[in-house]
Length: 96
Image: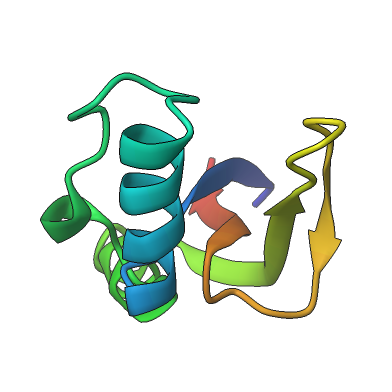
């Protein structure tokens, strides 16, 4: 019996007070980096919520890591904290 391993990589914004302050107040309203109304904070998912959704679909989270945007260079890099943005790698193993 062989096994097929499927993977998914997701990046998103965490639902925290920090993400509200930076993604909505700063990026939308103050700096105008994205259009006003582009983000709906209530729809942001915490890492636990997203992990639970993936588990319900038969996948398991292999890696969860924070991400940060440098506002001057507009370049992304890895971060220890997932309080703002995060990336998640999950696998689902299906018997063939």
